Length: 317
Image (cartoon, rainbow, N blue to C red):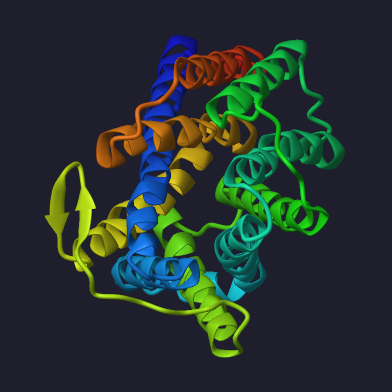
């Protein structure tokens, strides 16, 4: 029985890693796709609103099917859904774009991706899950990798307001990992994502209506990997792949790995962003960035090795 339980745990963890990497790759693709649209006249707010709105249109009907008439789950988890939609979806996006209007993208991303450290602190303070030495070593190695991937060694200027906005994005990201991994709600992953995307889209739309998030779109064709495509093609990929798919499999990964492990695997999103910039935008990464990606991966492995092993099941007598 113990072997069977260990095999099930191993299979669940392997599936969780696969889903987490797929989610990180989806999120990592969004930057390259969005950058070309922004260059043609789209505002970041318009790109994000369209991306989340399309994702909500796709995921919400699937969420309704997954609930199987259990609408009481939505009512019972209204606070969790609002937290996920307002902070993890809309809040993280709004704060990040507010940060990059005041400071460079690299340091803003680095601050946002201190979210795994915030998750570790939360689990320690709230649930008494003290991090092991290997977890701390993995976090340090992953942080060094992020510095190299984001090419921050050349020196950057930090704007105080930008830092505060980036910290807000970090809080949103940490909430995403913590809420995604919570299985006590009874909500299927797709239902949590669908409801959260609707809430997040409405929140960003409201910010646009009151003028806090500039909205402007364009219909100019865009170029990726040397080929011109219609403006709506990258928009569809942004909505269907980098939002709908990435959020759903991200929550499914969190349920299997736990918030701490899932948050560290998500750091691969930065390395994936560099890779997609190379493939789609012909921006060849410097050797230090490739080394940084390897260090991030090594940090994830150390964090995994530092995870506590589940206690063996006691055979029934």
